[in-house]
Length: 384
Image 1 (cartoon, helix red, strand yellow):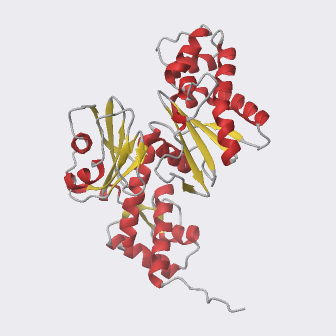
Image 2: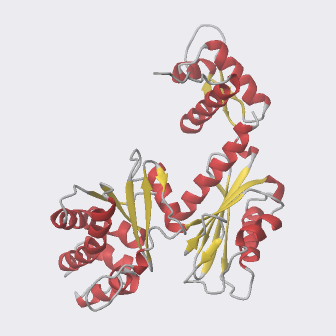
Image 3: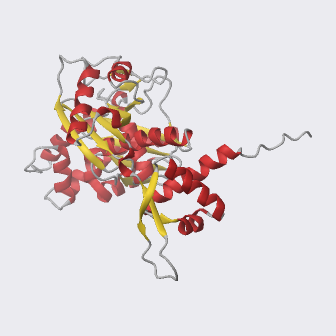
């Protein structure tokens, strides 16, 4: 049998791998000395010295003080990331507002903006205005922006990368992506379905961290699903993977959202006597979890409804792990997740764990910023 000779990494590839490993450690742990980088990476002293010099010359890292560890001789010099070297923007498009967040290279938010939806405005103009206001809030000029990721409801065409259909925003149309690229002067821009961004955030930071395969079900005013298979987001041929809005739910012809989306959940809560001060579904679920009268019965019936769709997902995809996200899924916490898990595992023979989403803050913006930072880091290390 003829063996194909293995290809060893080129010196440039090895440098890129080492540089990214050091960057990740500095991002996770903060400033480190050359000795600490050597110990944590397992690289040789000359290799670490070379990468530190290279990253410092590129402006990626800079001296950040001295180690406080007691030792003979002078204290070791610490190196940290230059956080304000560049900035990225994450955007969430909602039916009523557009939110924008600008962060430094560590993911720390330095500016934000919120604009009301304007059906008369071109979508790319509205998003551009939101980004511009967020930059102004951070007292930054547009030339400091290096990448942008937008989370939107509806379908994103995998072939073009642009929106193809947004049911909640009938006036939105294709040209969001090229129009925004033009107005931002060629800054890298990526458009992604908003639930997919929540899935990526939970994969990197939250309940699904360390799992290669899982499904995330999002329940808020609308519903959706993100699917990660073998570590990769699955979008489907037309970008419609996870569009649970079209899933039939019962013999009466009702669709799944008519049972588990925000309005339906709030109506269900009221039939059980739960009337939260804030008249929305998440508040009702929070009240039920907190022990409100009728809460147990309400959570049981809500779990029945969610499990109907969740069992179908598990029967077809067998993800082994489900995350309940969105305002309703997170509000339900472990109480709702445990109920859904019991019903799904009773319905199918496929063992499935269920957990609530745990990403803090706005998961869509968190996911958008994560991907925008990935784009920035790819550019940074491609040039090193």
